[in-house]
Amino acid sequence: MKFASFKIENRVTWGVIQGTSAVDLGAVLNGRFADLKTLIASNGFSEAQAEIASAPSYPLQNIAWLPVVPNPDKIFCVGINYEMHRKETGRSEVEHPTIFVRFANSQTGHLTDIIRPRVSTKLDFEGELALVISKPGRYIPKDQALDYIAGFACYNDGSIRDWQSHSHQFTPGKNFPNTGSFGPWLVTPDELPNMDERTLTTRLNGQNVQQAKFAQMIFDIPTIVEYCSSFTNLAAGDVIVTGTPGGVGAKRVPPLWMKSGDIVEVEIDGIGILRNSIADEVQ
Image 1 (cartoon, helix red, strand yellow):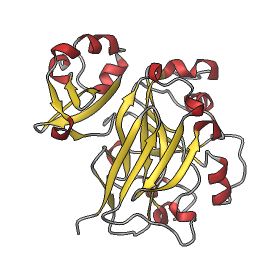
Image 2: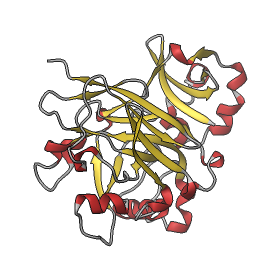
Image 3: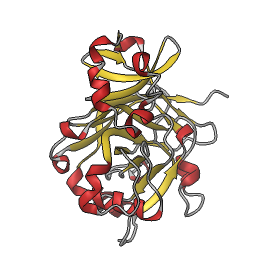
Image 4: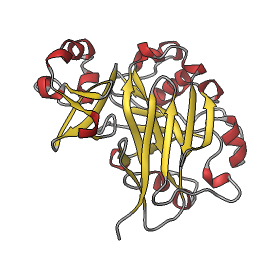
């Protein structure tokens, strides 16, 4: 199933996407599951499925998309996790994943604007796969990691490159408001066999700028889950963004920065297409 968070008639809700309709499960299950994170934490997927027929539905053009999980407790991002990207950045090989964090309020949803801040013109794209944690866990072994994943989504880890490079810490350049796009929906793992063979493609104004299979990750999904759960308690609804392939705008000659009016898409086969326009911050 495809689960999403959205607004309808200025009401924040959540539900299931079926074809060209959004089924508003929040309207009938709000007393039990206030949001998608609560549903995940309660493992309420079967209960949600049972209510689909009785819930109101709306055409997709009538909803405003939100980040898949608007209120995660934690967002972890993996840096330099494809060999082509490692080489283009000139980074050394490492024994452990490079982890940085995003704040929940830096995110935006499908078909919304990614905002280029007024303090920079160096807004870069980073198409990625995101996973959402299904239940609490600590010291999760790799062979059990998939049991802790509620589903997968597309992510664009929009980066303000000059602020990212102010120091060795990535945090400032990764947390400007409305720069991390997350969506359009969460696809449950039962619909996504053979994840390693699936392809991620990023397009800017219709041109492919990034493409890779998940088998090309330096650190695979179970390794990332094991590593993150070793230094913190993972919680249901936490998001792990697994890294971007080579081809980022900052390493092109000349650099390719996103600007107002551009359209950027992140597509993962079996999941869907996350699409955003670029807009300048209002002065």
